[in-house]
Structure formats: C-alpha cells, structure tokens
Image (cartoon, rainbow, N blue to C red; front, top):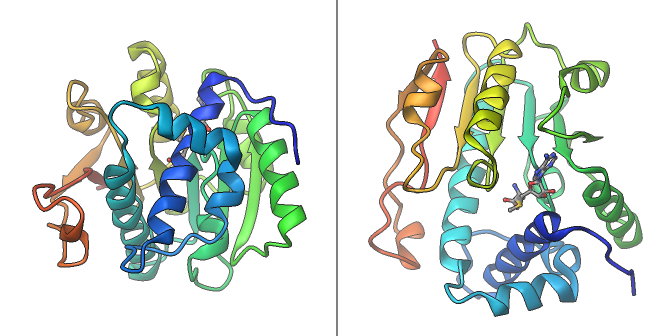
Length: 238
Ligand SMILES: C[S@@+](CC[C@H](N)C(=O)[O-])C[C@H]1O[C@@H](n2cnc3c(N)ncnc32)[C@H](O)[C@@H]1O
C-alpha cells in the first residue's frame, strides 16, 4: 500500500474522490468513476466518514453537472483546451469521452500530483486526452508553467475551479481570477464553485465573464437531492 503524505488541504482531494467513489458504487449512479476509489484510498474514505455533513450527494450532483458542462463546452465550438484548477484526484482526463486532440491541464500541489500519478501508473489508466499534470502553487505565479506546457492563451479555453475558492483568502481568490482573465480570450468558459456566503458572480463579471443561466437538473440529477436546481454558475467571456 502507498503511504500518503499529503497535507490536510490535499487530503480534501482524497475525501472528494471518496464521495465520487460512493456515487460510482450506486446502481443508478449519475456518472461512472472507476478510478475514484483507488485515488481516494483508505484515508479519503476515513476523512469522508468523519464529516458530520457528508457531502456525497452534493459532490455527485456537481460532478455530473460539470461533466456535462465541460463536454458541452468542448463540443459546441472551437474550444480545445481544458484547465482543471486544483484538480486534486479528479479523473476526468481518464473517464470522459473528449474530442480528438483535446489538451487537458491539471494544476495542483506537487505532493498531490506525485501521489496521483503514482496511483494512475499502478492502475494502468490511460488518458482519453492529452493530459498535462502541472505541479504549481496557485497562490504564486503559475501562468508560465501552463504556457510552457503548450497552453495557448490566445485560443478559447474552458476552466473549472471546483472545490477550491472557499479554502482561499479573498485576496488570493482575486489574484487567481485576475490570472485566469489574462489567460483567456472571448469564447472561453469559466466554471467556479463557491460557498453560499461567497458568490462568484460579481467577482467574475467584473473580469469580463458573462453569467450564463445554468441548467435545472434533469430527471437523473434530481434523483439525489430534488431541491437542488443549479449547483453552480458558469460564465462565458464575451
Ligand atoms: C477539495 S480539493 C478539490 C479537488 C478537485 N477539484 C475535486 O473537486 O475533486 C482542493 C484541492 O485544492 C488543492 N490546492 C489547495 N491550495 C492549493 C494551492 N495553493 N496550490 C495548488 N493546489 C492547491 C489541493 O491540493 C486539493 O487538491
């Protein structure tokens, strides 16, 4: 068994993977994520089970929501670049049917990506896109690393910032959104999750993102929590 030495914040990535694994186990699951249990590991499940408010339904719904959003974005136009900011143990690079030639960038802490890549190598997983895992500190400068990995800032892109912003101080959130703004052109998409007390809308619209009404849950999505109507907001650069 691998010894996991990730810090507390990185441990949240394993916990979220455990929540996806629990959804994957359901016969009526909203998505299949066969790598999630391995990526979560025992610490991820233990972390999840210690939580008073187990977030499995929320994670399941947001996962399916963003799966649909990402695939719709790359199929709708000329977007050929996906950036997963704070990717954690996200396995979308392996489980989604990306169009040919799609480049997907995963940004996260070195400790997380080293562990993740070791697990993926052991499991023989094969990416369904051109995956680039970039070890960065998102509170520092990271645009250079992204561009050095052949990201093209003058072409449209789609960005997912899932499960990160509520861990960061407000000034760091602003710096992150500023950096994303400098790396995106009209026709690009941004999908952040935020907590109820920290809505992303104003922070994103002030940087040129036009809020797009998000879809209500389909019958399948409404299965777990009927009251959830829109787990996230997405924005398009106009
Ligand atoms: C709750 S997890 C979410 C992971 C993934 N987006 C998901 O939903 O499964 C938060 C992630 O943010 C990453 N993270 C937090 N602060 C970071 C920083 N300063 N630089 C890089 N990654 C960071 C952690 O390593 C962790 O993987």
